[in-house]
Length: 269
Ligand SMILES: Cc1cc2nc3c(=O)[nH]c(=O)nc-3n(C[C@H](O)[C@H](O)[C@H](O)COP(=O)(O)O)c2cc1C
Image 1 (cartoon, helix red, strand yellow):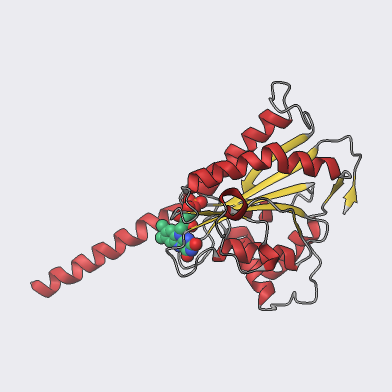
Image 2 (cartoon, rainbow, N blue to C red):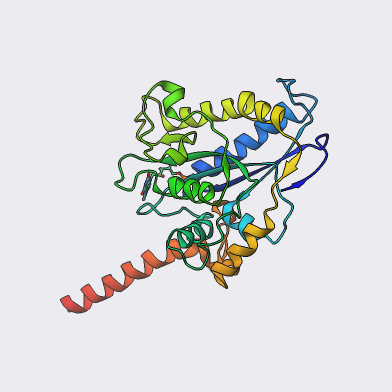
C-alpha cells in the first residue's frame, strides 16, 4: 500500500454489479449521500466534512480501467443473478475470482488485495437455491486475497434476524433479501445500510485511517493476465445499455421465438 498525507481526502470507490438496477441505484444514492454529508459545506453531519472523494462505476469497468490510482476505501454493492451468477457489470470480476478459487494460475499469488479496505452490501433473494452466491463469492475472493472487510450491519444487526451467511469471512457484509426475509423490505434494508455507512461506518473509518491507499495496479494486472482478451470485451453496467451487450438480452429471445414460430408453422402446413 502506498501512503499519502492524511490531510488529503479519503478516496472512496464505490463499485457495483446490477442486473435490474437495484444495486446500481443503491450505489449512486450512497455516493450522493456521502458527498452531501461528508464533503460539501452544506452537509448535515459535520463529522469528517470535506474529507471524502467518492466515485462510482461498475466492477468490470473498474477492473478493466488501467488506472492504478487506488482508493483508501472501497464499497462493493452487487446482487446475484441467473443461477447464482454475477449480474451485469460484475461478470469479469466474478470470473477472475472464480479462476482464483479453482487455481487457474494464480493460486500462489494470494496477496494482491493486501491493503484493500472494503465494505460490502449484497442483494439477493432467498427464493433461489443459489441465495447470495455472487456477493458471497466476491467477498470471499477479496478476503482470500488479503482484503480487509470493514464490517457493516447485515440484516442481523439491523433488525435482529439472521442473515443466513455461513461464511465467517463474510461476517459484516450487508444482506438485503428481496423476499423481505428479515421482516423488512429489501429497499428498507438498503436504506438502513446506506444510513449506517454515511453516519457511522465512513466517519469511524476516517478516524482510524492513516492516509494509506491500496495499490490496485497489481490486482488489475493479475486480472488481465488471468482473463486475457476477455477483459477488453465486456460491456458496461445497466446504465450503459448500448451496443450488442444489452441488445443480446432482447434480440436472442425474439429470434428464438421467431424460429420456433417458423418451425411450428412449417409443421402445421
Ligand atoms: C431471474 C432472476 C434470477 C435471480 N437469481 C438469484 C440468485 O441466484 N440468487 C439470489 O440470491 N438472488 C437472485 N435473484 C434476486 C436478485 O438478486 C434480487 O432481485 C436483487 O434485488 C436484484 O438486484 P439488481 O437489480 O441489482 O440486480 C434473482 C432475480 C431474478 C429476477
